[in-house]
Length: 516
Image (cartoon, rainbow, N blue to C red; front, side, top):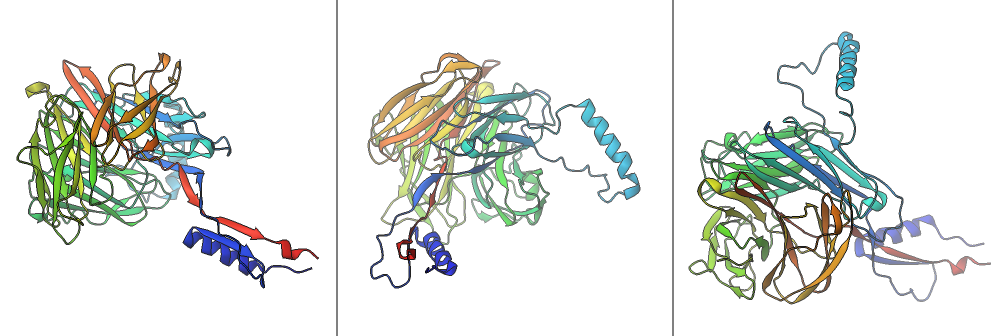
């Protein structure tokens, strides 16, 4: 009986990994079979990281975990958000003698007995299609490290929403917990005296990560020795006050986070005196054309911050995709962005009472990749509140956002290049209710603002899932508004493709020649 060498099989698999397709035949075959293209299959594992929510005694935080219903037939799996490991105090000796270990272990056990569940998951999701929530008002609540497996991995999302009613950090701070990575761009931070911006780094792995933080202002790189070689211990989180990383005070700063070793989750918490606070998530990867979706209709100020990380300057067209058409803001139809210098422009009340989204594109032909974010203000004076909208990728096949409520959720859908049809599913409620599904058509070059149809019999919160059915691409964001003390506190989360599927090379094995 003939046999095919294992090395041939291994070579075919390697070819599949490189080219996206491969076919396997026995030696001596005259004709190779038709190659099969790579297939898309559901991911089997997902990771998410949520930053430490707040240090304020007045803060209340809700965590929401959700996986949309899918077609995965894998194992049931689980999705858990676990507390990160607290860092030792400054005066604590990490090299304490072994003769003290037994006493320390006893003290640790007593502490756990006093705080039951401190070493257990904060949120555990067991079923797709229905969100699970948890609340905390602890001022020392830790960052969370999450993993989803099996059928709960594809499309898993988690939302952290914090309401701080008073104080310098007052506001509604919302963030979709982020996947670990090695490179992040944050246009829109600041080091001015009125800012208290922190960059939060969370390490999900069992070995230390080392990160570098670069700061770029309108004149180029800011001097910052303190941002080099930052160690993030295993399964821990560190927060660094951005103004302490440099002696230069600048209103608009682009923060660049990279890792030398390991990977981290990175997000910036912005706090402005008398203006509020929110989370600033990373801009999508540098690109020639960017979309920043979901400026509220009642925005009183819109501030665009952009950065060109390459060696070439960028000249971009600034366009607002409004309710009915696309147009250029008067006097701000283009923006020149010098290489490695942060550029900004105040677009004021550009939406003029209608919802809108910003598109940046090259002025002439091929452009230079850029990153960008919007600082959006609602209200005026003592009642103003801020939120940030980073440039984001399209919804793609599917994207979800958790922690929607019976009132206060608005979905923005933008089709920058052509008419598209999308399906929006409002999930079952966390405490009861049945899902609802509705289809919307988004005209090319416009922004459609939708108040979602809440689940029937809703109890608790729910999640929104957007699927592109035809046309496109479509970019989306969700605005959540909570009124506290007469202030319309709000936060905006973008909805890029959830990455729930991955290309897997298809390898065809023709073993007919093995017959006698």
